[in-house]
Image (cartoon, rainbow, N blue to C red):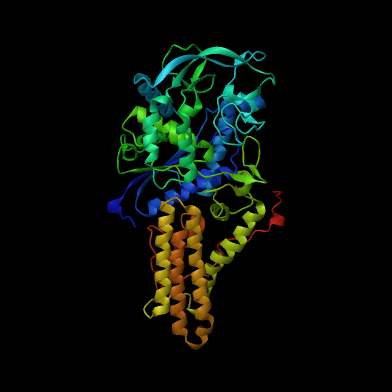
Length: 550
């Protein structure tokens, strides 16, 4: 694997959640947990990782919620940003920086990007007709409008996107549009806004996308489909009183930069904020201007065009900044056949889940079901089954089994590796191969397959123990029994490396036996070391006692 001398800067850029409501397991499985697994692995290989994200505090879902609750957007933001931070801490999501789009730094970087594109002619001013609620006396941001999707005919499409088919929309495309404020049909009224000239980037984006290798098929196909349809210029300001100020005049008062334009800039602004916080003013350039660096964006599939079309267009227009190396967008997690959705209250929230499942157990169950290639149905039964039949029964029991036998039959001392025979060495060689194969899968962002491969290592150790029967050997050949158990423990150390990015808490619980996992390789446990009486790593879950109805 990569060593420190070959360190590569890896930017792990993670979707910015709207601070408008609790995040659910679909969000966690879709972007945040995959990013954490990938980042943890890259650090263990010696790469220089910068993993950033933050709460999106300017999205119209926030103002929609504030209006419905009769409170202010800032109160909503404060409530959910705090909840997100608590979720990440309890799940051990290993951010280098988790910030928000509400910082002065983010506004400054957004203004810089806006002005650079404006000065180069990639942003211009136009008059257009936008929906206006006569009853409320105000223009309507996209999410204040609902109607029938023109593509799939879903009756609950929003003015910016249809959650049912994933297509991005302009409000004027909706059939039978309705104002969410008054419930009346809005009218079109002329207003002025700034537009990003996406059409300027049709050819460079087409060429760039055609050169992408190793990307998921659904990501490339969706992105190329946008290009083939022809890119349309999009308004990047809105009639709002909540958001980042427009840095140039000329379109009247009451305008703000629209969230879809400024939120993606957060990846860059967060990198710059991290550099400032660490007293390294230009360190962000390692990840943004270095041609040898990698930038991997973890998002859900509904955000694909923003990260494979719009953000790359902005980066090309700005100039001299790295484009995404990969955008491994996950598909949807579904609950009872419907897409998990915070706005519609579909799916178990992260906060609710952490009240009933151990963090590592939840991380494992979700990682084993990552929706990498297709939508994945998730139920409480399936989470419980994954935890009990796989995590507890295979990995947890293996660790406890080996440590208990060493504690009871080897005077609680880790045995020496000196007398290993061909069978023992074959097991360890197989485990070392699995460690390498898991690394290859994770590096390709095939995280579900990597976890399965890592767990296959645990099965191999169990098969070895069943063949060697050290519990019988301890009575007839205690020296051979000790060698077998020491070999099994060394193999467990290798499996532990494979599972470390997925299971940070239980990995750390074994530090007293093995030492910390600080590189991507199996290390021999320190023979002769005394161990404590082992305790189970995980608890079985009893769905009937959870008080949940899935």
